[in-house]
Amino acid sequence: MFVILKAAFNRGLNTFVFNFYCQAAASVLLLPIAFFRERKNMSSMTFGLLFKIFLFALIGNTLGINLINVALRFTSATAQSAITNSKPVITFCFALLLRMESVKLSSPYGIAKVTGVMLCFPGVLVIALFAGPSLSPVNHHALHANHTSSNPMGRVTWIKGTFLKLIGDMIRCMWIIGQAALLKEYPNKMLVTVTQCVFSTFQSLVVAAVAERDMSRWKLGLDVSLLAIIYTGFLVTGVSNYLQVWCLEVKGPVFVAAWFPLCFVFTLFCSSFFLGEIVRLGSILGGILLVGGLYSMLWGKSKETMIEPCSEVKTMFSAQDEKEETKPEENNNHRKKQEDEVSAYAVEQV
Image (cartoon, rainbow, N blue to C red):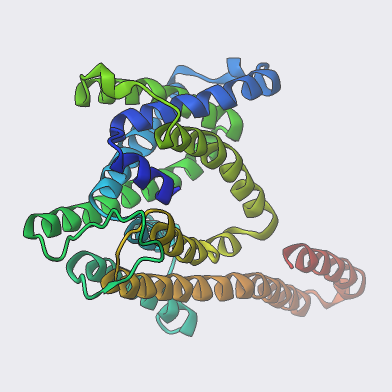
């Protein structure tokens, strides 16, 4: 996605116009599905719920994605993909501030999570502030090099784009945490997703109309701009997001996030081969720091997740033992029943 979008933006596609077309394409894809599957549940959506979804669409799909697209225009596909690895760590930080997560510094797993946070933000700074020597592109015939290190104004633009990407990712992470609370209130994922896409389509139309008043820039031809809209609107927003949700339900969030660094490797190669981008050493070093921070945080989180169910079972047994000491006459049958319940609980947790 980053490579195709970068190619489209290089050819002059306005980022705000693109977001409008992308949200519209996603709405066209999802609206018929939602109508046939959820039309009986549409009446259950109250005005207060619709207002909340409108705000979520404004924050996540309109503001957040527009910032990320502008950041991509200012930097490279490789840098953008590298910074994306910080999203799980940023989400963890916000969850920690909201007391949805906890850190035990006396535990090696808690230290690993803190280490992950401490590695990620230096990684972003390295990408922003250190260019380093350039690596020769794989494809020398489609060179669209961005000589940011030799051009002072280009370097300022690069730094601006890096931090715009970070801010955009932070907004999207806040949106993800808010989505969890919203889905607890109204657990219909399809209607929430479709409604946000529809709201964001109209919001993005207003933003694009203000940002780009030359209607000739809105026209689409059979080129990479149309490919970017179709690919992002249908495959990424539709197919890819559905597959991620399915993977989350089957294997959990740690398994899904563990594959993020592979996107960085693919983008590094594709941007060099298809776009002829000159990849800077700073982007690679920063990406390595970000990937290291991601895996450190994920390792600590996964280990704690495995320990928690065992601790709960142990607590249940301890409480039962105390109860039996106070009432020995109810020992036999009650003990057998509780052991069966705890065993079933342990199997369910595993």
